[in-house]
Image (tube, rainbow, N blue to C red; front, side, top):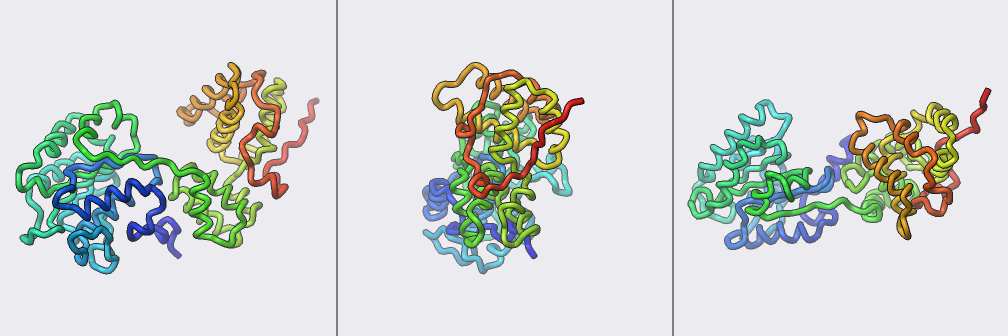
Length: 372
């Protein structure tokens, strides 16, 4: 049985979920390739939002053996459409530079620039006569080689290079905006793939599993954190445990922390309950995902600060955000202890909506600690 991330991988533009504007622009390049085909494309965004899938579909459609001029959809039947541009050796005009290959990135980079100096293979000058060079993880390109890349998109008049398309993928959006890669973005067509909302991911999951309980799919959508791939991976894990996707089993599989449990944590923080917090942590540390808990607590603060944020809430939000950025160096419990005594959240209505509350399910039990 295939993994859902592979089984549900889009094979044409119609199966690509959301990002309508980005898809429309990419399809426009294919439909008007003589006038609008760019020499460089930058795709940026959070992991799992569709950057690699969009690049793969673009390449498949570009080299599709059955695609006619003015069309943008891959046929799905020819040799090109059935192969994967990232690993296929049959696509002579595609070079994909990425980690995990047998060769080092430096050698791959060198060969890619050599390919850029050569015209596309094949003698037929039709709408498929291109060469594509993809740089996955743009931020991993050595800074001293960046100037070599900047030259190519700026010189499109040379016949050989006018048919070469560079595609750059990156998750480091901040580097594209302000860092050393900004000159490259200025020379390329830029696409930003945003995180999807929980509602959008829920709608996608409902289409895949129409008979699953809504509460279960809401938990998975919350867990995915804006990523379709993350949602499919979580759905795969839950289906292995329970094919009916019951709320209880989904919550246990994804280590979901309900709003009621988070409220108890907030109250222990406000009441200076060091021992209670420590006891709770020791009893339940293996029952939830610590990183997800911190993100949920940040969302609680976001909702509580809508009207008028207090100094304590701003400080707590800053500490939690700092933990997310340095999660490998600081324990969650140590971060929560820094919040002890702050006046943050005491009303459950201020917490982010929990789909488990309607079902009455409580994942983590927090018995009252007994002190000697």
